[in-house]
Length: 88
Image 1 (tube, rainbow, N blue to C red):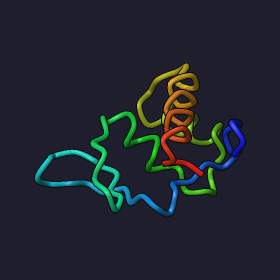
Image 2: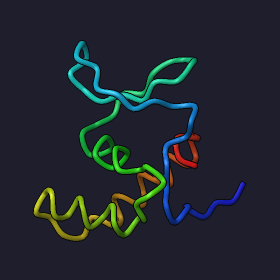
Image 3: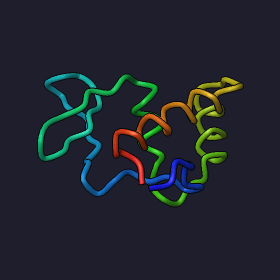
Image 4: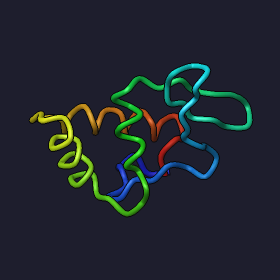
């Protein structure tokens, strides 16, 4: 497995991203359990569809939240997601 992030990250088929009303938050579901996501992580992972590049994801988030300099946070989350098997 390569340590480099994919140019167009996508959520692994083993995980399903969904909003859990009971928890009032986004979660990643997988056969063995669930990962609760903070709002930032959820916004990033919602855009990991295998179509968008990392730069596109960053640009969309910066526009949506009227923020600048989000690239390091996005990359950190994607790297952690890749380590945990969320991203392929």
